Length: 436
Ligand code: ATP
Ligand code: MG
Image (cartoon, rainbow, N blue to C red; front, side):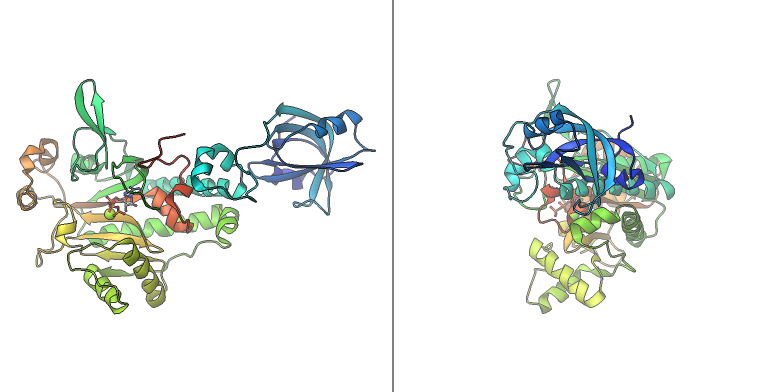
């Protein structure tokens, strides 16, 4: 017999079915037993009236424990008490795996455990349908990202995660012993995506692991996360890159509202708000807005988390938007390869994208002219020619280009208003956590 899921019960009224799952609840009364089992899609009520089922089944149920895995064959009937409106009267019950009791955490979600205890027992923590919903949404989000880039002519690339140094500062690198040589885990695919643009692929994207050896104990930082990176050639300015990000966000939200309506409603109580036009403000304008609300930031400083959150609220109020692009970031806060505008060398043609007051992306037009790039590197105290693999990219024909690094984990955190980035990743890695 083919197994069906809880969500299919409605199509099998008065028919014999095979279902299986984890026992969520057992209620034993003198003449009846109720079992609730859960599968990936929801719950199924199993009803055993003593006078209608075999005695051996009745006795078997008395020894079952919560979270045991069972398989049930029986007839689907309409039920007023059952949550879904159906119940199954069993003909046979098979115990596939008997669970130890008690479980280390409450899987029903009725008793709260600390996040850290939950993460120690993540596979049990995920038995809760609300938690599974997060990962169904995450799975679809990644798929929609690929669909978006693919349908817009981007080529999917996979770049090395074991490297020598990248083009970032180098302070956030995990060292690896590579057969006696010093290597590092990639903290971004920056060098490679620019390389592939110059190679002539023109538009590329990658969804892959990014490693940051930063000892940040925050609700928004991990030491290993999933980066969504893209790079595109023949742009006119960073505005084109913002366009791509904006279209990507609209595409994801539209797709999720269609494909994950149920899960979004379970977590948020509603579907996502589709942005009309994402406002674009300069860093200077953003700081003026913040100053008016009493939050003063020095000219050359980046936002702190509080400022990001405040800005999110201001934008929501003034533009009715959950998103905002902040562009023209100060030169001091950006890497040497971001392009500078012709008329102002104190800022860069770069931007951040914030969703619900949280940075989810940083992007920029890159400097593609070797001599200017070399000069910019020098201003930061870097000798470009020491970075041979990178410098070469610009010597043999490199078109104007730009790109963005987004964090999938941050996107899920912002989208679902999670209070911690760790809620949206199966098995987080942070400075203290290396298990399970
Ligand atoms: P932050 O300022 O929040 O520390 P960043 O500006 O250092 O982040 P970028 O180098 O701009 O990070 O990385 C691009 C994107 O990758 C970020 O916008 C964010 O979505 C994500 N990201 C960066 N660092 C982390 C991290 N430690 N954990 C999870 N996601 C991250
Ligand atoms: Mg950033």
